[in-house]
Length: 481
Image 1 (cartoon, helix red, strand yellow):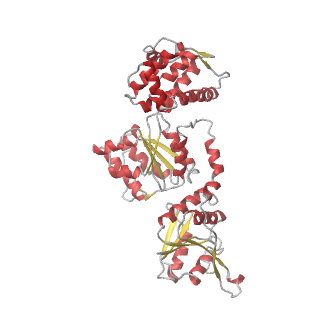
Image 2 (cartoon, one colour):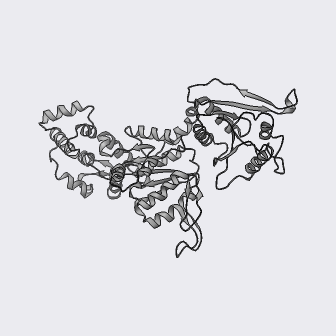
Image 3 (cartoon, helix red, strand yellow):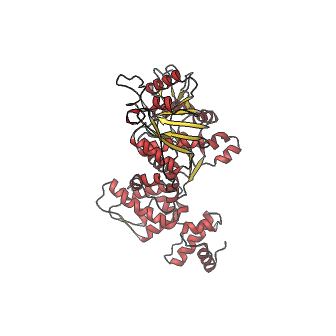
């Protein structure tokens, strides 16, 4: 299949009165050079909801003059017509769908950034593409338009990564969140996922591990960053409330529905919706959500006609969705739609002692600034040891809450007696000794018990450099594996 693809040129394809310009680049291409193409994909920066009357008018004129030609309209919902990352991502997504075709890119129409996006995609995607441009007849020796191919050498250098580097550096400099060594690879994967707009992502992790922050980072790195990021906690809403919140409703759908109301998915059009605790939604809502993922359509409560939406959905769960599917409580087809790519965040305990220490230091500074405290608290060695040994089953969120409580109740120094009662109750079971050998042995025993004898997880949690170190310590202390 041979395809022509292009934007249309508002200023050149139309005259001052808004009529189709027969001498414009698109009409000229069809008059002189449109030979052997199976179809022409013509693109607009507007959205499916807003439509594009000018593009409709241009396509209608082509269909009148050249009845046999196939025209296919694509509204890409571009928020910023000079925003490189957004345009490049959406153009790239469209081109990759046509990977088996011969693609001629009509380079002339569009903004300079649109043309740059064509060039980068042509250079880096490895598709069968050509860049074509035309010269007006008044500048040609034969008084007719000329068709020229832009010849460039293909390169394996990821030019798009170079162009987006400044944005990446800015995004990583988040003073309110610590991206430590263990989760840096997860955030790097999220950045790569963000560059491919149509891929759905499932984030796994226990409660309090930072799933919402990771989803927001993915949104900020995507072409949708200038649009809304909306969080929906699925477990906190009943079916009726969740359905009306997501899809909206029409007047008369409920007793109190006195006017039409847009849902979150429509209000966030062009942006990202984060569905937290997706494993808690009912079979009925699973079916409704599947329609959105498959067709990009929503049906408001009480409505008879569906509407198109353009949103990226990121889902998250702390549950084992595969087990839910096997038990018949979650749809396999929805699971496969949501989990095209997956990201997994470790628990705080799995991140080890060194990272827990780093997070304590980070929250000590962050919360001092938030609460406008003049002095940073000093934690005694005994209190710090209890903080490092406590399992924090609520993960990062629980640790942050504990540090906040210390700033509320302490002026300068934090002693064991200042720690929350739950930490002291846990510590009553620990060795009262301050001899390091006894403390270390007790730590190994409790970590092995916590991880049900898994030495690899125990080693990582304690922070030993290798599992051989753990085994050596276990032999020295007479601890059974």
